[in-house]
Length: 216
Image (cartoon, rainbow, N blue to C red; front, side, top):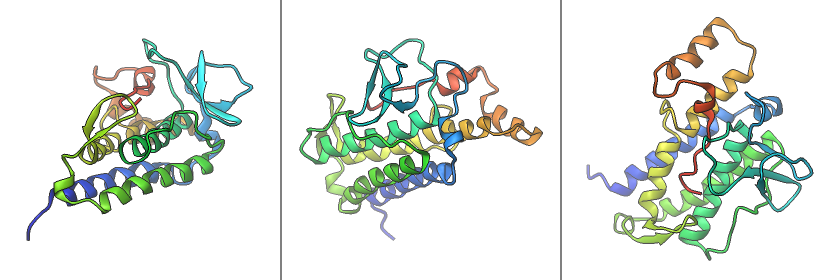
C-alpha cells in the first residue's frame, strides 16, 4: 500500500492532540491553577497584578513578557494549556487566514473552558491537514513569530514535539507532571513523577516547568 507523507503528518498531529487532551480530561480547577512555586506565571483575572505584562482581551489574561525572561519563570498547567491553544489560533490565522490576530484573545477562565478552547483550536488545524495533499506540504506560509515556514509540515512537527509522551520539554509531559504534583503524594506517584526528571538534563521543578516560546 502506498504511504503518503500527508497521512503520516495527519497521524502525528492527531496523536499529539490526543495525548495533550487526554492528560487534561477531568482536570479540576484546583489542579489547573495549582502553583508549584511562588511567583508562577499563570492565567488570572485582569485585576490581579503578577507579571510585567499580560495578554488577553477580556476578564482573564495570561502572563507574558517580551523579551523572554531569563531564567524562565515557572508556569502553571493553566498557562501551558491556554498558551498552546492561543498559539494554535495564531498559527492558523497567520498561515491560513487573514494574519490579523494577536495574543489579545478572549482567554478562558476555568479548566473546563480551557480544555474546550484547546479542542476548538486543534480542530481548525486538523481541518487544514485533512484537506491537504502531499504537494501542499512544502508550500511556504507566514507565521505570527515573523518567519516563513512550510506551513503544513511545520504545523505537524510542532505538535509532534509538543505532544511527545516523555520528552522533557513537551507540553504533554509537563502538563502530566503538573497534574501529578498537584495531587496528594503516594509512593507510586512520587516514582512516576521523579523518574523522567532524574537526570541532569532537567534537574529541578523550576526547569521542568519553565516556559518556552517555540511559536511566540
